[in-house]
Length: 451
Image (cartoon, rainbow, N blue to C red; front, top):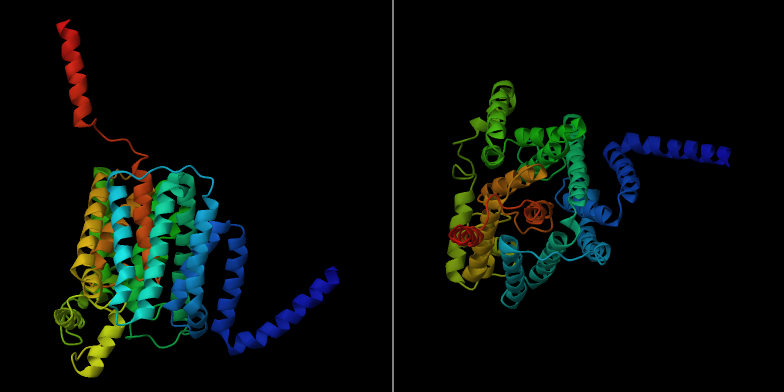
């Protein structure tokens, strides 16, 4: 049997070597895929499905044609598998009811998912609306189940995020390596984009990954987890994305401030060190501030925003959930717009354009709950990373539209980070007793003293 396996290995090697010479990138990705799949088998059902969602949504926005082709329908199947896996692995778990801000957020998300589904009635792109609304509903259901069942165990939650961050960080490391090896197609705008098809997409995914990786490091203080911060950090710098740069700074300052004075000064020292030693990395980003491109200082975004408001004035009811790309394409073809972006480059404005003021109002209610949550949460470990990622995300969504883009990885990180904050909220008792409880104890003391 051993000689049979040996001969098979030699034949396989002989077959792979010519392919590797002719198609090095494709063969490399295939080998990585085999390694990843063998690793996934040992991670359990839920984590395996979550990583498949990450990989297929990454593939959908990559610059590698075979990966894009596999991910076109693969991401939908992966999300369905994650939904089934979430309910299956938690079927025997005890439900812990969400309360306060957590209950508020989950309820408002369910309302927004309902509005997204109903918008198929007036959508200009019914298929896109139905598909994306179904994926959004799946996301809401998964988040609810995680908060109330699976992530009631902190160790499980940390392990789930560890797997996702490891895959994302390694994919960014590979992207940096193959880029500088000259194995990738020409970039979208001449800037670094790694395995992604757009530098801005690379930056916003790296932004969340960096904060989540830092939170995991604070949870266990392991050297390997600290190394996971490096690839997303380098990706943000190399893409020269201004919005990600600003969001990272704001998220770091917030993270340091919420974690106490010691963490605040540590963050300040870290930023000062980065500014001093990493000048060659950051100066190209800083030099891009104020540069006029595509007609304005925001790379054409103001033209897109003006177009979005103009289109909304023509149809106040909105254009349907996830129909923005079709709307902009139609407006450009008909001459209503001289600009043809793929999105509104603003998650809040895009929600308004698609599901009118009703959907936008519900989104505002969701965000109010998120703000209350991050102010009330007491960061002590991985929650520090969650909190920084959520704040940085609130900033980045003013110039990008990834908030509900379930066809790419962002919402599967961002809303899961919010779910992590909701799940860990009940693990930290309030700093002070509620006012009513204080009053009852004061009255009891007065009664005992009087008697």
